[in-house]
Length: 591
Image 1: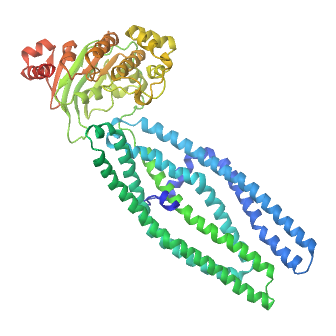
Image 2: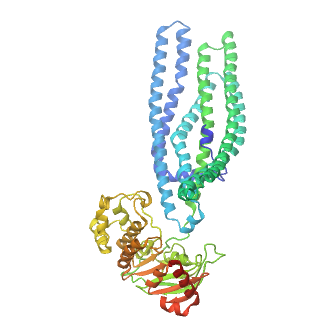
Image 3: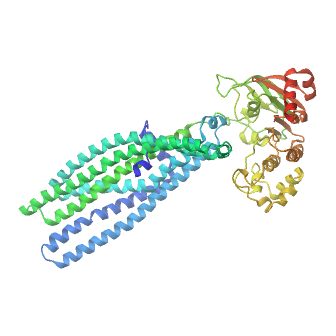
């Protein structure tokens, strides 16, 4: 069921441009690709010469009773086959090597492009679709590179070579076969038009199945917590049923196509036997010629059937290439400007928002006309109701997004004018749910400072007062954290995130309430590490609890994208009714 498994959608606007672009991407691989093509051509010539040796053995050996000619013809045929198989092995390996090298390069380029995209790209793109691009679409290319390209090249060379060989041996039988081949081509075109719709549907259903699987597995805790296993299974069953129906639509196309191919093949053999047999009886054609022609005929139909399979692999690969190149064509909305410069050292860490308006959809601003000065070394807490714009301000301070109007500056330098490396060195993020990568604890601590030594890591751990905890681990810094840090508790993951930020030595810390999900005992430990980390640094804290606001040097309150209160915690309690109501809500929550 190659057709169904590797179905692709066929809505590709300009195949020529797509192939040219694909060829440019693989330009360094042209020399070995040409070498593999030459070897494949030589292998095909060796194979095509075989039936000529058979004809000579029959007509000049068996018919004339010359044993020597029969022996020589047999040895020549065996020698040609040996040469063919040896060259075929070399060409197959060479073509596969070129294909895998191409995919290696494409995967690297694609992943490098994805991780450089702006946060808006990831908000727009479903994670299941991105995973499908890097899995099923790459797999389509891999199947073509591994099998399809080899099959396409060898079978095209065989079909062209056999067509000329049959015409060379006997043009009358060749014309009869060509008529049948014309019927085969018409049937194949009809089949492709019918099947393409089915394959396109299969391709769409594959994406839905992948998305359903990913969502179900990622949310399995919630599913089990609410005893919704049966509902989720039913939901996935509907998606799975649609995928099945799409596959059966493609299967119906296959069910009538291949029997017709088999019938046409038998018809061609019968035609050659009738035409050739009558002419042998008339004495106008040798028996060896008929045998050689039948050998060529068998080699003619099988490659044509193979090419029909390869066509679908090619279409799937073309569709995958179109999607992958389409992703590569997406430019990040946030990128380093030409002429960007580095921050002057030392970085003080003063943050400034001037007349900043921004919306994830430009027609619907999330924050409006924000003017905010955060002096170097100040700990600023941002409070407000959910959806008011707290996180958006923090994201703009990290330059995850650029403001629609106005500017965000660091030490008087617009973030858009700074080099990415300089900006990232100066500003670090500590999210509410820190992400740890699979690997060792030491690797995760040093993630933001890959040149740091082991001594540097231990110095940071000691400064934060968590070195004893790390030493108590089974393998210390070499302890595997497992996927997403699953080996550690939420508080331990937060400590690792704080150490990671400390080691990077930023001047500004953006903190998404690092203690909001922790128990009181763990919170005290994390707060102790935070005091060390934030000492002498500018901090922007998205505060979800009263304690974070109380510990800040300054608090601003955001409502509907605007700053409605600004001052110390004590001052705002006295002067801002909105802030006072928020504090009362927090206090009732604690109680």
